[in-house]
Image (cartoon, rainbow, N blue to C red):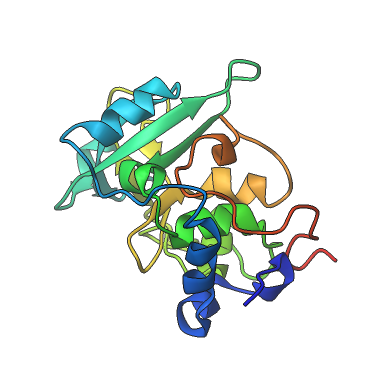
Length: 206
């Protein structure tokens, strides 16, 4: 199956129509498939490509005072890239960065699907939902929430999590849909290569 950007109306469809399998086949000869590798390999790869490793925890009610924040179970390791030219940042989970297999987050980034403009609330969160992901707390949740660390400029990170658990920050994904690079062009560091033919129109923008 030949993949074009116009085939992607929403990433939820990708899970059922076999596009992921086809995308994987396109890059199988270009990159050697690897597992997680040696302990610490994703972290080392993050820093070697100019990123910073962050360990974040999910927290609910971040729109309220810090005393009312509710720490949830679990942690997630992210790689943060910062642009040397404008100071903008983008985050993605270490697994999403390091895997050579296709992931819904990587495909979402590469496809640059146009936002449909529907819904009221945070546009980055709504865009994440449009693509079949969840930013953990939803675009219309007044309480707010996100992935928190005290040791970062972005103390609260809004991350788009897809059904395969691949994760990328919602604002970086949203801006990239309109050709705006935040932090770094992830196509230069993602171990899973862009499977779409060069020069094809972005999904929904033909």
